[in-house]
Image: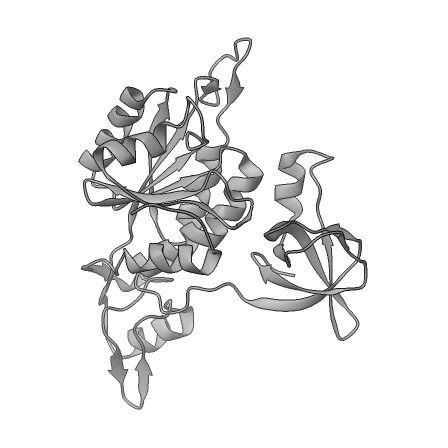
Amino acid sequence: MTRVGIPYEEALATVLAAVAPLGPETTSLAEAAGRVLVSAIVADTHTVPAGHPLRPQELALLAAHGISELRVVRRPRVAIVATGDELVAPGTPLAPGKIYDSDSALLAAMVSRDGGLPLTVGIAHDSVASLRMRLADAIARGAELILTAAGSHNGKHDIVRTLLELEGRLYFWQVAMEPDRPLLFGDLAGVPVIGLPGDPAEALICAELFVRPTLLRLGGHNELSRPKVRATLEIAVARHPNRHYVRGVVRHAGAGYAVRPRSLEHGVEAALAEANALVVIPPGVGMVPAGSPVEALLIDRV
């Protein structure tokens, strides 16, 4: 049964319950950095645990004991499908009414960063038939997770939700958070599908909150959450009826942290590039005044 407007925690739990760590593969010591061991290795009095990314010092320890190959969890193959008649690939001449697809580049970079292998299978037009063709190609190429960008709004171009309802399964559509409405989760032919907003700023936020933990779970990681800090708001921020995730810049301030939310007034790309955190604005009405303490999820170094 499809659920609509569910809480963020329930939505993420639903996604994570539907995926499990992938199977093992053997890799050389030189290519194992950041990967996760299938099972712990004991070297003298030291144990290199499974479930945590291998660091240089642990690889050095294993090398010192003559180990040259490791059994690690496979990297997930992740297909990326942007949707929209208005989209063209970068490098293509830009005709009137067209825009370049930036979502695919954004999501491919995030997938690589978080240990996945991105499979870009092209842009789907605003039709179920076109999307079906792209997703069939993704599944044929061995995708273990599919990410779509746009195509899940309520309306005639709601092709992702329509296809999953017709030919797959749809577990939830819409989450009680901001940004929320275009976000969905389901599966097609047994492959999990996360439908993200088409707006790059919203896609980044939703990918951080849903795609990153999913990739880490598939890759065998134990720690799925971003580090959190309490920070003081430098400017007032408007509340929403639901919990609101806002891009922001966290900096050191005395013995603690301060955070300045980033607006889109200077462009989406600038706001994305400068943000190093997602600021969590609690639900309510009115404004959260400057000087208030808030929670910030760190997505980059402070």
